[in-house]
Structures are given as C-alpha cells and as structure tokens.
Length: 425
Ligand code: NIG
Ligand code: FE
Image: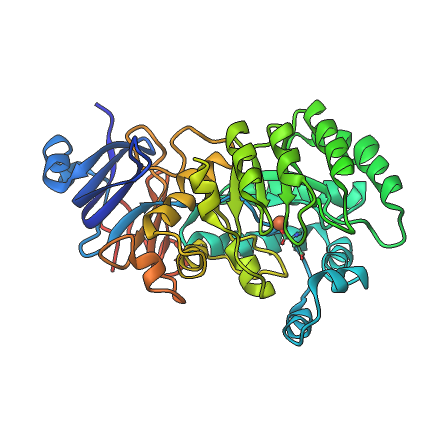
C-alpha cells in the first residue's frame, strides 16, 4: 500500500465540489487523506481514520473549527505586468472613463511601455510576486495572459516569463496568448490584426506555452469580425478561443463565443439572456469578474441569466493594473454582496466552474477522490465565512498536491512547516 502523505482532519466543514444536481457537496467533522499528491479518501473524520490511521501520515494538519475548500482556480488574470497605474485609479475616481484613459495612450498602453522596458528577470520576479500573493490567498491554479507586449518580441518574452515563473511555483499556471489586447500606439487596427495573425500567433504557438488565445472585443478596440479572424487563426495553431465579451458595450461577442465554441466568454456586463442561452447551448463558460465592475464603478454582471440558462457560472479576479486584487475570496465576497449570488454558488464559481473555464474537467477545483489534493483551509466554520468575513484573507493554510505551500497568509518555507510532522501553529 502506498504511503499516506498527508491527513487534514476534524474540519468543521469540508467542501468536496458539486453534487449531481450542482448543489455544493459538503461533509461536517471531516477529514481528507492524501496519497501521492491525490485525494485518496474524503469523508467524516472517524471513517477516514479507520481506513488511514493518522499516525502513519508524514504530515497531519488539524483543521478543527475551520473549513476545507478546494484550492481556488482563478481563470482570468493579467498577472504579469510592470509599472504602476495608481494615478489612473485616482483619475477614475474623479470620473475619467477607462476607455478615455486608453484612447489617450494610458491604461493598457502604459503598462505595455513598462513591460517593454522591463528586463526578463524583472518580468519573472513581478509574476512570481503576484503568484505568491495569489497562493497565500488560496489560489492553486491560475490563468495568466500575455497582452502587454503588443509586438512579437515582447509577447514572446511574456510567454517565456510566464513559463519560467510557473516552473518551480506551486500555483499551476495556465497561459493565454493575448496579442489582441489593445492596438499599439500609432498603428492602424487592421494592420495590427494582420501582424497578430501572420506574425505573433505562429511565433507564440511555436513557443508551446499558451493553451488559449484571447481577444478584447470592444468598441474602439477589436470588432467582432476582427476578433473572429484572430480566434479562428488561433484555433489553427491549436489555441482554444477565449474572449473578453460585452464588457462596456454589447457588440455580439458573446454570440461570437458561441459560434466558435469558445471555452469561455468573460466580463459580460452587457450580455443579455439571449446571449446567455446561446452560450449555454454551445457550452461556453461565463466568467464573471466582479472586481472589475467594483473598481470601475460599473454595474455588476447578472449571474442569474446564466444560471437560468443552465450555464456553470465561473468567477475570476481579473488581476491587472486596473483591477488590483489577487484574492479569489474577495471575488467571492463581491459575487455575493454585489451580484447576490448564494455563497455555495459563488464557491463553485471560484473552484470547479472556474476549472471548466480553463478546459479542466479532471477534478481540478474539487476534492473528489482521485483529484489533486489542492486545497485551502479557511479560518471559519463553514464556506459561508469566505464571503461573510470580507476584507481579510481568511485562508489560513494552503496545500498543493498534498504539501503545505502557504501558511498564515504567506508562502511556506522550512520555518513555517515542520518536516515530516504536524504543521506548526
Ligand atoms: O480584463 N478589458 C481589458 N483587459 C483587462 C484590463 C487590462 C488593463 O487595464 O491593464 C480586463 O479588465
Ligand atoms: Fe481581462
């Protein structure tokens, strides 16, 4: 019999994932046994103890009074960037619109300048810092987009930095190529689309780092037809489409996502119930980004219309210099308090449904037997405490493949995790 790697025991509540009817499946007074990085057994503590005597485990974690949830999956981030746009935050609060800032060469285009100027080492260090923060807030899988290069050389440097930062980091990183994030200063849009399709995409696909291709389909950025051309070209190079859809204006990008069988359509502030139906019929996962609406002062997306259509609503942080939050717990709190989602639905949105938005239907975002033992221990007696206790990091401990990787709001090292024994308090 394989060695028992880790046991987390006596959790007040343990969230397994979705039940057959898509409600949240939970256990009370529960434990989880980990063998070879995977969940070997989950259930009431005494049942697990009988099968897997705890004294044989290399590591035991006492989760009394706490809640064990699957590690958060963050399916939409622009976590690799450089520079500082805090002055734009103040301008936005004075009423300056996001798109006006972009038209004046600010916003994304300012970050592009900073990324082009940053060294390879700085890019890797910047992303590592963001991944550390995400991990400490309970995220164990995260998507990261390019799109602050907007030329072949810098887009490739971003892909290389993503691969390098991901290499020995506990967070599983999923890369998306997004050369069509904005039109670079001084360029005609059509001419830039040609460059993305003919030059950037083949070179990016050749790197073998990205899994998805994304486009900012928005008035003043890329039209539906330009977005279609880029996403179809991406598919030819093996990159699955994703799309920034119906964020500031309704252009028909949700419908485009359905036509292309995109894995997800994200933002959706202006999507209608017809859009939701079309997406649900085509299996496109709606990814809602409440932090973006919150920081832009816009109305939130309507999760209900996607739920009514039978779609698995996913949540993400949208971490970027315009929406500066690494915390999926905060996204869950905004989804509940701002979008009126039930805590259980928001939690599924931040875990299993978020994994579906990354094309991972392999147990990622769940703690079912056989899935990777990626989990967060929340300092509160039920999953409701994630959104209920907002504004703090209520994630106490994070495990990746059954190993303690973060503790007390920081990435773990030898000083915080005892070798081969109980996790120190
Ligand atoms: O998803 N909407 C476009 N892209 C990002 C913002 C990126 C930025 O402002 O740097 C988003 O919100
Ligand atoms: Fe985005």
